[in-house]
Image (cartoon, rainbow, N blue to C red; front, side, top):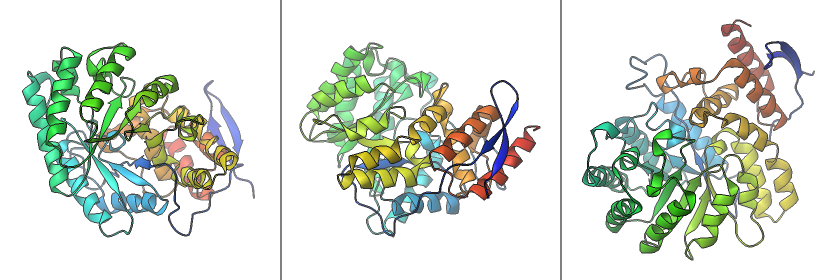
Length: 387
């Protein structure tokens, strides 16, 4: 029986939508990829225990860890406690520490499970930060915590550093000092201001070419300590420019949720690995596509991954920093959590027409695993919205 649902459109009307997608089959065991693929994972709120959702949100740890098992079962590494987990937008450093501790412990129980953990400076308020030494101390605390717990760090872009740094040399001095101290190789993190307006001018310049020279100098200075760099500028030409100039052995991880398909496939000479928030939302489809690519089946990779791109572009549309709402919306539709609430009430950051568009595109990309469940939950959301 074909499922039909009346969904709102941008002109304020309702239009009947007929399902056309098919749920994606799960692999019997985690597939092997020929690209390193990190899925940046969200956290699941616990609305029954929430007392201060804006300041110290309650987390449903059982559901949060279950979602990580879901990602590991599909062959992904996990990028933990990063932007997709609402780091600095609902999840504070105290919550991140608990998340990192629990995820590292959980990974030890799962054969082959791997993760890297976000370490930044979000215990500092940018307005209360005055010196580079403040930033260095904050990074030392967070990376020290991750490594003491047995983890590897993603050195997240710092709002505090963006505030106090006056030049590319300031960034170079901070990163050189931190990387000199790390026990393990680190993934660097270039997050554009479309994801976080407070990171405008990161690496000391709003001009891409100047910022690129600074970050390449940092990597060259510390190439034995840098596994790679995640770049999230939503501009494939800029990622390719960085990728071409990385030292041998330093990896490029695409964080481009608009152009990831072509960047992962590559241009015949170079390709990007992946560290993506969209992989949280389209994990079964991305896993299937990457398995095809690993088997040399390039056209099959394209056929599976291509329909997820319009969905990702909708989820990450401006204001891009609110993409987490679309990611959690799909987790709810697919039964990974039993409610659609988020830390800091972030589900309210998008409107009902946006969610209806995601619903349609998710079906067309074969992302809705349980259409009957998704239909019932979408109907409930429509009712809450007065439809």
